[in-house]
Image: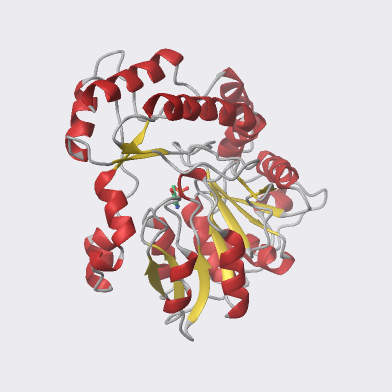
Length: 382
Ligand SMILES: *Cc1c(COP(=O)(O)O)cnc(C)c1O
């Protein structure tokens, strides 16, 4: 790859992040400790209304902890979308439960609420909507269905920081638990990491215990106490899902600049909307007026183009532009397809979106020149 190759993604890490990480390295406390606590406090303030924020080492662990706390057990069913990353569904299998996959709305590419009700059985416990690309799923409709059938709602908000729905931040909506991802290519990063957010105190308590071996107090509480407090009790066979203070140091700085980073992504999105509108492509759905889209992804879909999606990606790559595809739907992956006998006929919207879509670069480190080059190449090729 040449020097002027525009990668699909590059995280924005500056001297502030580097200094904060170095401070932590010099502090003598590397794992879950004061920085993680501070990050949780700041994140909780960001969400507002005294929601609890529990830092974990990935969104995948967060989703696993959330389902465990919600009481999902072997043989239960959990409804989610086929148009997502495998993590959303694999955590259901960790608990021996079975995912029930639902097709997407062709415009937002989020789970189609109209299709949820017909798959609900007496074994269903939870619905996991994914806020695809950073636009909110239709949470009011999903909540209505959940209430009617006594189901819990767990938001996979890996793409949705900071996104709003009806003017409210994702994380502060009237659902049971929300999980954010700080994986390297998400809208903010801790390298690897995630945050579980809930207003339910007993769910939060369970998640805190299970994140750390099922131990009823964390190591920093024990070591930082003024009296010797070596005693702890294991109350469940928990997991090892805690966030390190090294990761939390990155998170503290990234959180401070999240709106600045979102604004830059939005600028790039606006430019794509303005410049690509006459090409044979379907542009992504915009959020409702007044709502914020995190613009984690900018997914375009080819529509009567003279090129195939694969050819377009290859030609863009040859011309120095990296793109990606979100997602290869779960019904196409051997494990999910074979285990649950899934057929693409049952997920026509997801299948069509998959066949025609590609994700363009969109991140704060992109320069105006990068955006112009991408637009120019797309115009030439299409
Ligand atoms: C990235 C992602 C996850 C997993 O996040 P990790 O922090 O990498 O575990 C889950 N769901 C979706 C939709 C994602 O994009």
